[in-house]
Length: 163
Image 1 (cartoon, rainbow, N blue to C red):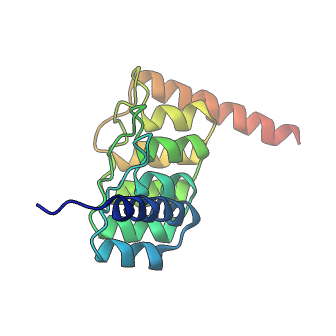
Image 2 (image 1 turned 45 degrees about the vertical axis):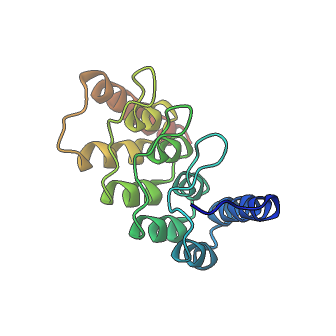
């Protein structure tokens, strides 16, 4: 096995930082060329956030799709136990959530303390996103999730009428 010199190791670390920034900023073309040259599609930062997690959290749809097409693990958790779908549900990015679900993201993946992507969508008031998540899964939403969804729908309809 070949070992890297300190200079080569520093350059490789710099390339990793560049790749993480490319994922955040949505430069899919450059990022995919790095992956095609040998960089791991599941590269993580120091907090366990993958390239997919970063592109999804920053709503970089084309970049996320390119990573998924290259085999990025859709449900890989970061150091806090969060999946890309959970981060997207916190932010409310419905189109990104649809993409992740299409590639097999688990709507009911436990992200710690029983919280799931569906829980985050409900907790942060993303009604349309929560509805899409519930409809996309073969598994029935928990009774508490269904009740919370109905309350959220009622609240949103009342808020609309008050305007």
